[in-house]
Image (cartoon, rainbow, N blue to C red; front, side, top):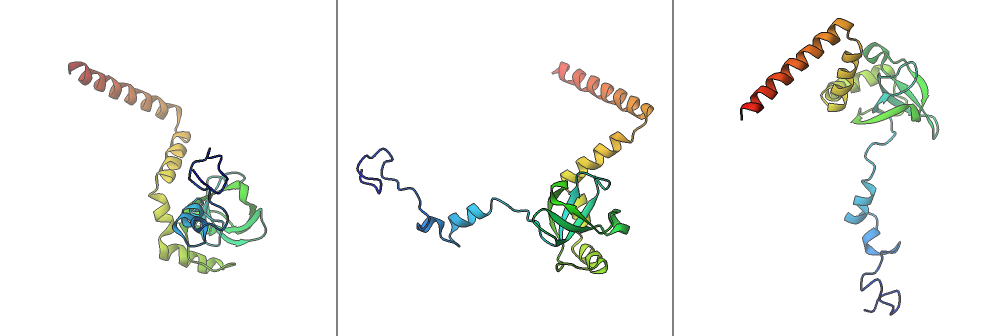
Length: 167
């Protein structure tokens, strides 16, 4: 078939989209689908989990962007235990939640925005937060608690096997 690549026809009649083709024009559905690849952006108000350092495992909110690699974060300290400080973006994981604050917001405005949007309660309801909580609970168990858990799992497994054996 005749295509924009000559008569060789090995690509068939389908033309590849070029930079100015209607499929990739800004605002078109195809372009919006391409842009939707990223949903979590580094922006003021973005709730994130600190993955490394002295505050690892705690939640913080991005308050300001310092440069390409670093941001200013705040807990607030009395809510999450994270003081306002600068940290690399590589040491945090962004969540889906965003508080409605301006760039460089003070702690009082941040606290009000978090409470108004119920951001931390929404975070607590996610499966990600529940898994972190369960992991923390398991790591804080004593030896005897781990033993009791093991025995409970064994008895539950035994009961399930007994029921399945009857069928």
